[in-house]
Length: 364
Ligand SMILES: NC(=O)c1ccc[n+]([C@@H]2O[C@H](COP(=O)([O-])OP(=O)(O)OC[C@H]3O[C@@H](n4cnc5c(N)ncnc54)[C@H](O)[C@@H]3O)[C@@H](O)[C@H]2O)c1
Ligand SMILES: O=C(O)C(=O)C[C@@H](O)[C@H](O)[C@H](O)COP(=O)(O)O
Ligand SMILES: [Zn+2]
Image 1 (cartoon, helix red, strand yellow):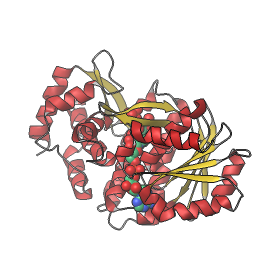
Image 2 (cartoon, rainbow, N blue to C red; image 1 turned 120 degrees about the vertical axis):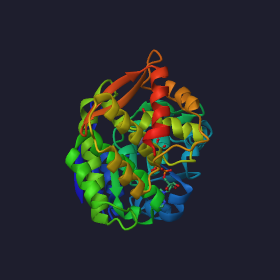
Image 3 (cartoon, rainbow, N blue to C red; image 1 turned 135 degrees about the horizontal axis):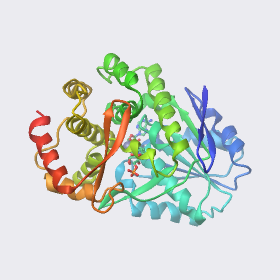
C-alpha cells in the first residue's frame, strides 16, 4: 500500500492506494472523520451488486450506522433527478451535519455524491472510494458536478474529499471500454506534463486487453502525481488547472451532442486531444508526430474521427458554452510541446474552419 497527500488550499487529504485495501476503509474513515453520526454510501447498481455487501460489512464491523443509496449506472445519473433523489434519501434518513458520505464507484458516482455532499446542509464531509481507472482523475481535486442538457458539469462546486481510498482489486471486473476511458485521462496527464511518460506509454502499451495490475498502478500513480501538483497550486482553476481540460473542449461538446452516456468520457476526451494536437501543430508550426499518435490511438481503440452525422455547427454551439469560454472567445488547451500546455483563444469563425479542416483532412 502506498500513501500520497493532496495538498489543496482548502484541505490536505490522503490517498491510500493498494491492492485489497478495502478492509481498512472503516479505520481510515474514522481517522479523518471524528465520530460520524451516520454513513451514507452513494453507489451505482453495478458497483453495489459487485462490492456493496463487502463495503457495508467492513463499515458495520466498526459499529457505524450505515445506509446505502443506489443510483442507476452510467452518465445519466449525473442529473437533477438523481441528485434530488439522493438529497431526499439523505433527508428521509435523518442525516445531519456530522454525517459522512462515501462516493463508492467511478467518476459518475464521485461527481454526483460529491455534489450531494457539497450542498447537503451547506456541505458535509465525503470520502472517495473509487472503482474505475478513470477515477484516478475524478476522485482527486474536488471538482464535483452534475450535467445539464445544455452542457457537461454545468452545475457543481469545489468540495474536497477527506480521503481517497483506492483499492485496485476493484479494477479486475472493469470492462475494456472503461479501462480505455480511464486510460485516456492517463494519456492526458502525460501530454500536459511529461513527454517521456507519453513516449514510454506509446512504446509499451499497444493494447489494453491484458493490462497488468502493475501497469494499472503505474498509470494511477503517475496520473495522481500530475494532478496533485496542479491542484496544489491552483485549486479553483484560476490558472494552470485549466490544462487538465486538455481534450475536453471538444470532448465535452461531443458527449453533450451525442447524448450523455452514448460515448464514454475518455473516448470523447481522446478524440478531443487528437484535434487539439493537430491544431497545436498548425498553430505552433511544429511536428508532434501527429500521424503516429493518431495511429497509436487507433490501435488502442480510441475514436479518431467524429461521426459524419454530427454537424460542425452544433459542436461549435456546444463549445461556445464551455466553462473556459469568456466573451464568446473559445479557449482551447493546446500544446507548445508535449508536456508544455498553453491556453489559446479562438473566435467561432476561425475554430469552425479548423474543425472542418481537421474533419476532412486531419482525420484521414
Ligand atoms: N471531477 C473530476 O475531476 C472528473 C475528472 C474526470 C472525469 N470526471 C467525470 O467522471 C465521469 C466518468 O467516470 P467513469 O469513467 O468512472 O464512469 P462511471 O462512473 O459511469 O463508471 C463506468 C461504468 O463502469 C461501471 N463500474 C464501475 N466500477 C466498476 C468495477 N469495478 N467493475 C465493473 N464495473 C464497474 C459503472 O457502473 C459504470 O457503468 C464523467 O462524468 C466525467 O465527466 C470527473
Ligand atoms: O480536475 C480538473 O480540473 C479537470 O479538468 C479534470 C477533467 O478530466 C474532468 O473531466 C473535469 O470534470 C472537467 O471539468 P470541467 O470544469 O471542464 O467541467
Ligand atoms: Zn476528464
